[in-house]
Length: 307
Image 1 (cartoon, rainbow, N blue to C red):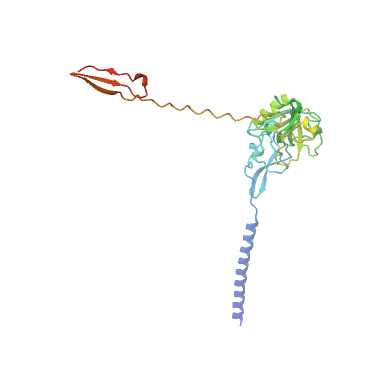
Image 2 (image 1 turned 90 degrees about the vertical axis):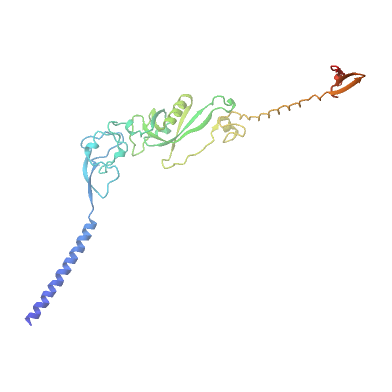
């Protein structure tokens, strides 16, 4: 009896040990699967605004859960001394694409992307939309003036020159205002391409410029025809037919007349062969030659040598 009880207890202990081992493996595998992998990356110690120069204490090393973004810095030395292109918030990973190139410094120049330019536009309370044109705003640029060689009767012509342009700075302020308060400044800097820089520079010298504020989320490009002062008084919204957008009459070119046909070559006249007649006078023989019928003046006999 005692031997049977011992066997039952030993069997129970074996089953319990196997079940415990199996349960331990299942729990361990689940904990391993749920364990998040962390990576040491560079994060901002405080809010960093555009144009700032990163110094000691502005960034630090911290654990980043999961896979860090592409281009995230993993050394503090690679971030110190570089300018901030886009704002970086406290605790956010520092990405290389949001910093200026090493040695580029800070300020407005560091915020200009590669291949782009910054052009200054003189503004006032009217042109600057009552001071609501701030860094980061999206604007359209209009020009007004009398086109060279245009119809002077149309008066001043207004046309949309550039659309959806980014304002880099308002005066010397290159940081966005979180509250959106209006700021009166004499100059704003607009981000443009080299070709747009030439257009805007020429327009600022020979025409009046007007900035039009637009919604930053509106990416659609409008195609207004432009208008002139004369059209406003006549009730028209666009240039009438027969006139260009600048107000100058449209010149219609007449097609050139076709060239005259080449002269026909005259046929070459071939003289007919002469007619030879042999005349016998007794013992003398002579040959007389007569021209063809087309030359009646030449139908006179010509005596040949007597045989």
